[in-house]
Length: 173
Ligand code: NI
Image (tube, rainbow, N blue to C red; front, side, top):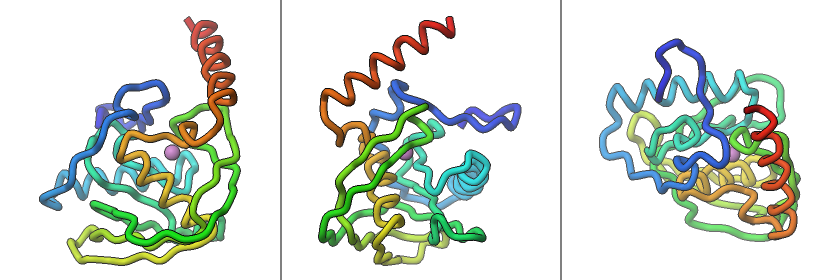
C-alpha cells in the first residue's frame, strides 16, 4: 500500500489492480497485520462496511468488514483466504462500492452464505450470514477475484456508467 503520507489510498475503477486476482495469504506476518489494521481504518473513515485488499493496491486474499453493518457501534473483522462454501436464496440490494465512484445499482445475489476462512490469528472460522452482511461478503470476495459489482448489472447500465465516468475523468484533466 502506497501510504507514505498516511493518506488512505483507495484505488478506483478502472484501475487494473481491481481486475487482478489476489493470491492466497500463506503467512499471517507483520505485513499482513499492518495491512489489516490500515484497511479497517480506511473502511471506517470512508465510511464503508467492507473493504478488500485489491482496493488498497495489495493482491492478498484478505477482506475486512463490519460484522453488524448498518448497526450502531463497530465490530470489525479480518478474514483471510475467504471462500464461499454454501449459498442459498436470492436477494436484490442497491449496491455501491468505494472503488466505483458516484454510482449505485441493484444487484441480485444469494440471500444466505456460509463463508470459510481464517481470522487474523490464523484460526479457521465459518461465518454464516444473511441480509446486508451476506451481500457484503459476496461483494468483497468478488473483489479478490477481480470482479466488481458493476459486472453483475446489465450491459446497458454498465455502458451508461462508463460513459459518465469518462466524461468526468476528462473534465478533471
Ligand atoms: Ni467494493
